[in-house]
Length: 183
Image 1 (cartoon, rainbow, N blue to C red):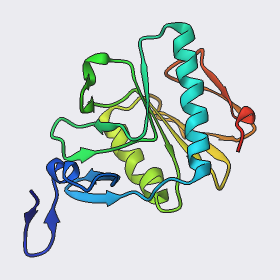
Image 2 (image 1 turned 180 degrees about the vertical axis):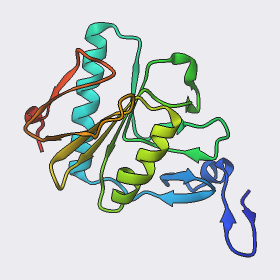
Image 3 (image 1 turned 60 degrees about the vertical axis):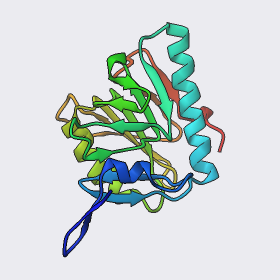
Image 4 (image 1 turned 90 degrees about the vertical axis):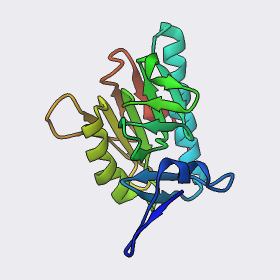
């Protein structure tokens, strides 16, 4: 259960697992961040990307696995952080157990919601890089843009629109044509 001090409550992974059924939240350094239900447009984008990545992996008989949210990711060994990325691609199956992914996924995609902008653009970018995520996409439905971070390079992110075709850094023969997405 949560530890309390005079100033603030410090939550743990146990608190996440004791949330009411259907609640979605993430844990960052002892603080719980609740997530609003996704919009239809958010889910359309999620479905499009999940199918594109999953179909490519099935055709190539690849060793990676793709999981849409909600899927538990514990990027750090101390379990002080718990995320539910919109899409997680894990290529090292030893990181997978019944709870989810223990360690950094190879590729994470977050679809920005109005209430998650600062978290997706700043906090998660920093933490995912620190954890060892190799590739991070931020898909912004309002701007109709995609930022692609190749975390193994120190370069600025590549910027795309919903009319572009994007090549993955993790799966170099995977290209996703966003113009094929139906919104």
